[in-house]
Length: 398
Image (cartoon, rainbow, N blue to C red):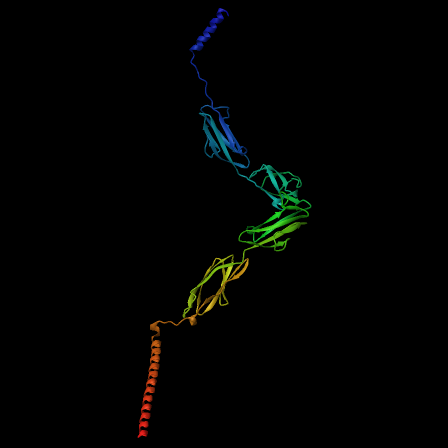
């Protein structure tokens, strides 16, 4: 280095040392999001990599089938455009909602137990997008074809893709494999009254049996019901019973309640007054659907199981009984005997019967006096007769 060059370098360093230091300006990032991602987009103006102490306009643009709803994060409000002042790093989210929502409804035919259908993607709603449907048959069945709103898809293909531009109803049709048969149990009055055990059980994942299988059916009643009889493709009143699977079978099983029970049957009062009485009949029953009250042999009406009393006006002696009717049959109570006025000792109220009492007393007194007079008369007559005889005897002696 020559002397001249060294002088230049020293001069530059001196100038640099005399200049004030200038700090580098900070910069802030703006992060933009859409929720959900497919709901739309978010733009910024001016569009830069970073900002420093300046206003930025962010704008939400919804995609087809969506609408802008609101901002969140470092922005707020429901206007599509808002201004953000960039004095720090900012994070804004535009929230969109779906305006067009379509559903895909699947029906498995002929029965829901024949198989299943899976959807990909599996969503509650769809909008202008493809969904793939795959059929899976249960044991004893096989996929046959699609029907319904499948568009241009081949109905015998599995899987198929369907474009969802409106709500769709799609049927997946299965067929039963050859040489297998279904066994259906029908419960009466309903499945809460009992169950039927099947040995052997159907083929896995189905209600089907291989041709020729002998199935033992055992009925178990739910208390207080009793097994009554079989129907349909089985018969008899004995459990267990058997069915040979040489075709599709439907077996009816009937459960019934026990015969109705009349726990109590009362009447108050049981004695009818001479002017008539209001008699309160009451009863309690089990397993009865209705009750009929008879007075004598005349029905007073048929009453539901929930009614357990009746008041009847009676004027004479009679009998009463109750007939309870239920699914198990009928039950008749013992007869109640109600006594009437002719069976009752007359009223002994002194005031009401005073004339009668006086009359009876007078008759008794008169009768007594008459008897007394007759006895006295006899005695007097006897005295006179005795005296006459004595006088007569004296005369004869003289």
